Image (cartoon, rainbow, N blue to C red; front, side):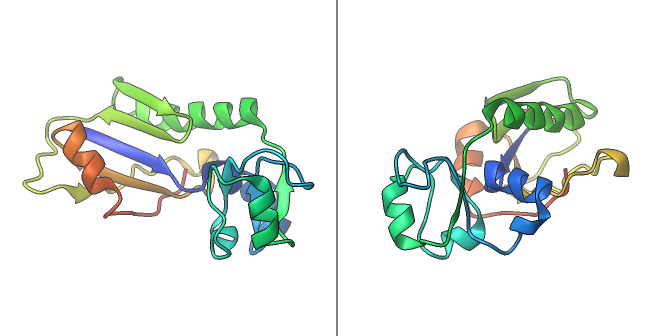
Length: 158
């Protein structure tokens, strides 16, 4: 069984977590305030204006001039990704990160869903909890889980 974990608006969510004054405001990670480069991540407030990952920063700026544009901190995001992997390693040693915000983990065979289903996320100890949302699904095979993944989402605390 494979647990697929897709972190929601990962880079922007980390910025909101670390800087609470950004919560509720449109946040874009990547590009420049002048509109050069591309959007690496946009929070859900920015997405309401039509901003999405891989969009030209100039287009994002045009769609939402008040968006807060932050430079990416890739090394830091990689550290947070490793922390999330560490939480999952308490349940399984077999983890395959596909990117900083998406990974697959082989989980114990006691999970045997007949249909793909939303996973109940493991809850870390309070000391390691960081408020980052994710989508998760457990499935027998990778292709069908990836197809199903966008249909089922759950919120977790990492």
